[in-house]
Image 1: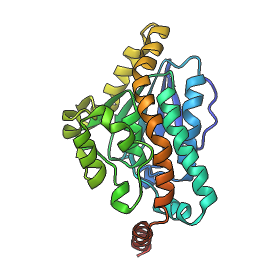
Image 2: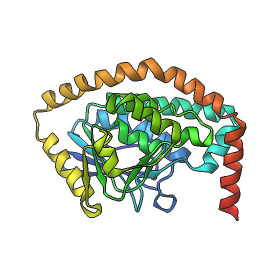
Image 3: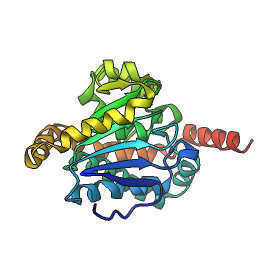
Length: 260
């Protein structure tokens, strides 16, 4: 396996030609902080360059896949325009890097996938969800624009009406509902979700390399056109939304609750 230069918040292990990617902040339900965000931006080009990698499984350590953004990190971004600019650039790299990665990526959604976690699921190639898991994109709910996943990709995966409903309400999408509307491929018992995702990755890893990679590229060209048509506006809108009074009030409320 190639050597990956990643923070401790992302663990990589090898199962033969399969790379198992684990989001590793279990004490925080794998919520996105700066290290995890920057690590994800660096991850997918490295996975693409790993010549021995034929498929990958992405999952979360502990009880969650990734339960949204760390509010301390959001507070820092709201107060620091330079760090916010870097974060938004990293967000773009996550989307484009995952979309263009030659390696098929299977999501094993072992628990809540919220915010960026939800985006990682949307950008995966095949999605297995635990019965107790759910998706949610609460960006608009807290006063932010979602630039890196749901509103950008969901219209390709489900109906535009459903994409609007879940992006504009932030409501949870239970695993069964996600599968019904095209946001997940399979729903599994909680204790089987990783094994079933790994079995799918093994099937992909056994395919002729060039055929699998070029087929994935053809399919993702549809996604790339949609993403490139929307992401610049989405990122600039997210940048502006960091100055919203609603976001400031929600950050203050959550930080106060954490202290109290």
